[in-house]
Length: 264
Ligand SMILES: O=C(O)c1cccc(C(=O)CC[C@H]2O[C@@H](n3cnc4c(=O)[nH]cnc43)[C@H](O)[C@@H]2O)c1
Image 1: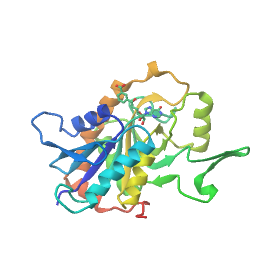
Image 2: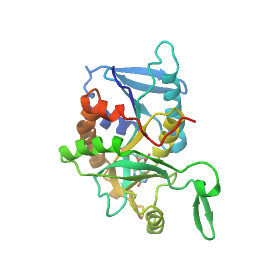
Image 3: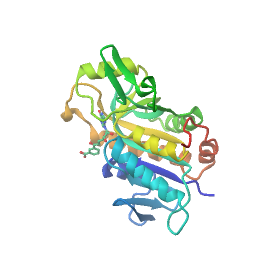
Image 4: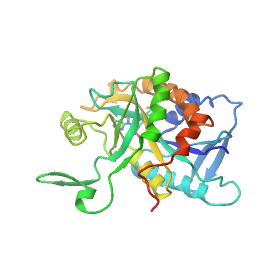
């Protein structure tokens, strides 16, 4: 049985790096374009990997990921089988000193860092407001083999919470506030929680994999090392390919779908 994995990025450049890392970047390899409702197109590979450019931010990517998951769950021509794993992938800001530029961050948790309320006494996450959730823990059974593959390949990495924000952090004050609330967080990006909410709605395990392009802190777009991060992302997925796609390790990763995510 071929396991099916949905990998979701924000932009095409990130998807290209993932595809290149998986070894699927040459023109003669079999990527089948699969049109989805909502003006989306999957890139489908025969080895069970679907790659989706889902858009920037948690709302756009949740809608796109939900569409892909809904189509996969339906029976009928071209819909394919449901997914075994969803991966949110791309570049990210790294929290100093946990994740310097180029570091790969594998999510120990996917956390919506601005889904809550400000009060005169401080920030309250939605759980403290009495509704919803703001975090999806990712089990060690999922992160462990991925970290081991990165370790074996000598790629600098860390397993730590990844924050999802709707606004890129641009001041030292905001960076300190987030680090104060999430002292073990290694990275922030803009899509992970949206992908995780969609995956959870379908009961599919989810993990986020990010390569750091910039430090979380005062805005300095000129200091972003996007090329370096995209190359790190490519190298990471090259190392992760056996763990994710059609190998005994992949079977280990995917045979143990124990996660905190629950079908609604
Ligand atoms: O301009 C380009 O060539 C280019 C190529 C690939 C990606 C980009 C992006 O701008 C990606 C935006 C994407 O990156 C994440 N990200 C990166 N750094 C941060 C950050 O410090 N805080 C939050 N998000 C960050 C985010 O997920 C965006 O969707 C450009």
